[in-house]
Length: 237
Image (cartoon, rainbow, N blue to C red; front, side, top):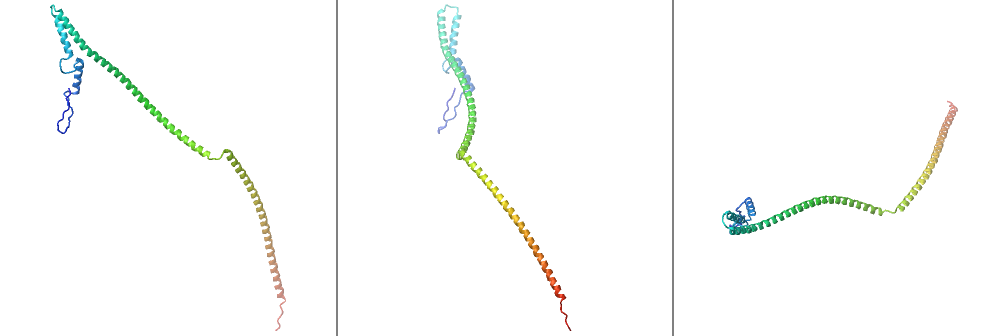
């Protein structure tokens, strides 16, 4: 039996509720009350009343007297008490059956919830994977879109091919012009080299002639000096 908590001070502080019996004793008492159909501590328990009715009937039947009326009266009282005792039992049985069904439904519901939790976890992992794949696909699409925009800013292929063709023609023309210029330059260098050889040859001839003239001039001068020395006049004392 529970004893309610009481206030012990004027400040309104309440102490924890005290129990006359422990939890185990409470379970025993509750089980005993359910079995004996005792719902209160007051009065006589129904099972004890039924036992008394049965004992009275048995004692009256055991007498060797002409007591048919009393036995019938006691039998009716016993059956009435038995019926009264049976009704709560049927109610209790109905409650137990209902609780068992409810427990069974609860177990099924719990299994279903656990299955749904596992399925939800699987779905979450799958969605995470799909999200990562979607992010990668979106990044690829953005890269492709950027490349497409960059390509869109470029001129058409036909125009690009025309530009390439014009550049190739220009390069060919420049190559031809460069080749012609190189040929002209080579020809000019040949002429200059020939001219240089001619000038060197002429210069060499001039130098040789000058040297020859100098030698002849020296020889002529020496000859004149020798001639003038042989004709020197004699001095008379």
